[in-house]
Length: 139
Image (cartoon, rainbow, N blue to C red; front, side, top):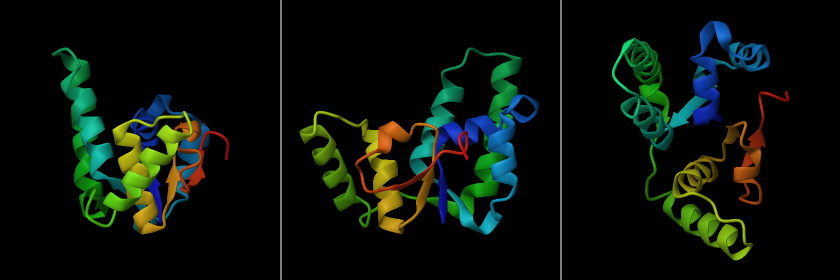
C-alpha cells in the first residue's frame, strides 16, 4: 500500500508540466495499491478554496475533484486506529525539537496504522516518525 501525499498529487495534476520522474513512477503504481488520506483531500480542497476566482481556480478545482472522485474508495480516514500513532508522532517530534504540523502528524499516523509507505517530496517532514518513505522525485 502506497499513500500519496499532497505534493505528489499536486505534481501529477500538473499534467503536461509535471516532473517526468514523478509521472513515470506513478503510472507504474497499480491503482489498487495507491491510496490517499482524508487529510490530503482537505489540503487539496483548501488550496483550491484559497485561490482567487477565475479560470485557474475552476480548472484546478475540476482536476482536484476528478482525482477525489477516482480515489474516494481509496481515501483513508484519520480514525481511532490512527489516533495513538498521532499522539506518539506529535510528542516524539516535539520532544526532539523537530515539531511536525498537525496535518503531517495525521498523515504519518494513518500510514503507520495501515503499515503503508508514504510517497512524498517532503521526506524531512516525516523523518523519525517510523513511516516508510519514498520520494518519487528521487526514485
